[in-house]
Image 1 (tube, rainbow, N blue to C red):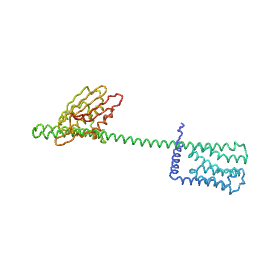
Image 2 (cartoon, rainbow, N blue to C red):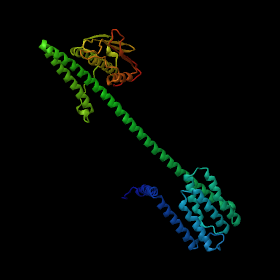
Image 3 (cartoon, rainbow, N blue to C red):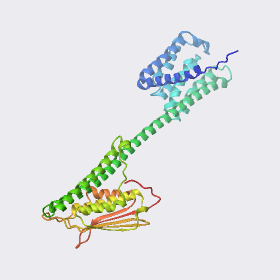
Image 4 (cartoon, rainbow, N blue to C red):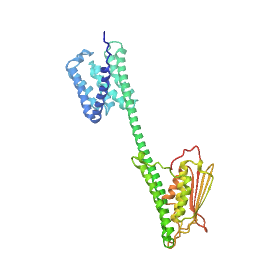
Length: 426
């Protein structure tokens, strides 16, 4: 039985990657040490040109083999040595070698070293504006015409057209390499720009997340500490007259503290590296928790009257949290700045077009022995957080003092319910 073995193509496929790696190494050397590379390349072609002269190889193609040897050596050096400046001054090098080419064609030496002009032409196509290729082509064609006129051997097109084809192919090769380099440079620039934009987006996202966390911590800690402060003040007054009420205040302080610690721990768990495994996935406060919030404020000593019209079921969760936090912050400000005789009113209206909230109080900010007016004028983090939450849903927020003589403070919020706008987590 004849064994049929598959034809191996390894040899044909492994050569290309090797060639690519070799080319990349050569380019890397060229980028790091351009002068060394230019010296090596120029030295190589100088040796080749002098070898051709020393071996009399040029006489096999010369139209006049009797050209003096010193002239041939000088022309060979004039074709090869200027390659050292082909990158910095390609047009000057081409003009010089074209003048040497005129002497070469007129003398009949027809040195093959004249083909080194193709290297200069390649650099012109690679580095200079494309309109210079026309001038370069004219300078390279002129010696050919002089040679045809001076030594007519065959038809003129047979002597000129092959060289013109060579010039065109080298110019096209330079244009192709240039286009590839430009495309690669554009891709690199785009990648760098995308990387910068990605870093900027990451920094913006980090800043937004920090703002959100600061807002949440302010709402959690600020409100609960205000409630605890109110309870502690009330308990200290009640301790002398009604120990039972003092004990109730202490119990309320403990409950509020535990609630604040629980919410703070849940927020910190989300920030930890192992948050998916350990974070408590408790729901955020919603409008259904308003009664509990108001009861806690009442327990802290602030009389609150609440009115609710409609049902919150149609309000998305993100908007519910925003409304809850605004009411919480407004009541916290009343606790902190309203004074000992302040009262508050919470009016919530659920309508098909949105949610409207009015929180008003009668506080003046004048406590016994502490003259002055209210300090919640809008420069703190609390009102800033309320405005940020409101702006997430294109809502409107108004906060400011009520007209005298009644005085007090009013916070008015309206959040539209737009089904076309995605719900966000404030």
